[in-house]
Amino acid sequence: MPQSKPKESLARKLLNILLLVVGAATFLGFSFGPLFQALGPSESPEASLATEQLQAQADGYRAVLEREPDNPIALRGLIDTQLQLNEPQGAIEPLKKLVQLEPENRQLRAFLAQIQQDTGDFEGALEQLQILHDRDPKDGQVLQQLVDVQLTLGRTSEAIALLEKHLEETPENNDVRLRLAFVYARHNQTEKAIALYDELIAADPSDFTPVLGKAIALSSATDENLRAKAPELFEQAARLAPPQVREQIRQQAEVYAQVNRPQTVENSNNNPTP
Image (cartoon, rainbow, N blue to C red; front, side):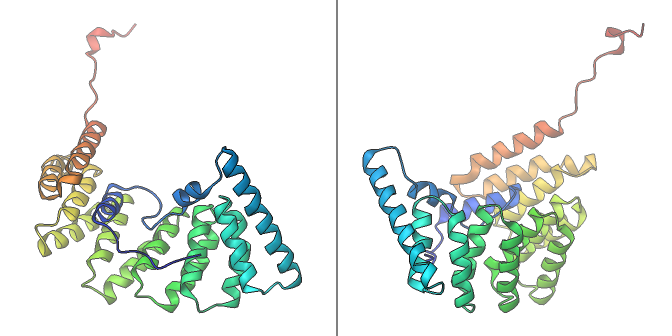
């Protein structure tokens, strides 16, 4: 069952920043995928026995729920066993039932939304995240997940409108500003993205994140003069970044340089027209 989230490590924070500005699709929040794999059964005899025991426990919880559909202990037990069996799909229905029984429990609802995301039920996750967001619009993690699900579902205009509204209400929120700039850049609104990145750079010239974001935005611009400014910004971001991520930034710069490198055009004399 969900537990309080530990304080984010520097390495995890840096990874999330890189995923955001580099443009990895999907979600920056914690994913339960590795957890499911770690808890899943292996091929050893001991693991097989443990799997059989877990399946027996799950059957027992189901038998209880047939008699007592609202039994919270059986619901939680079934959810736990399904996750330990690496069967997150089987945890969704009992978790939905538990959320119905405890509708004000944000942790449970967020847990349901995350498992729905991880199993590909983005519409279901969107519904739960929207409820969480409506009840507490200031929850930054929920906002981030909600925007990411909207983008995954192709609802770009909704995601942008949501972020723009939040930025109007909390103009000092640089996390929202960075997220909005990222979305602008990914959806060919380069000028808006650059304007936001410039605001962030002016606010904190020592932060590599908006510099890197701006470099990537320029690399994707249709204007050749703007693209030409990207390499210098990539190098600036690398100089400002912690040592752990400098090489990744320079590798990213090389990727964009290769993508945008002009193609060699063969001399027409080598291929005369017949």
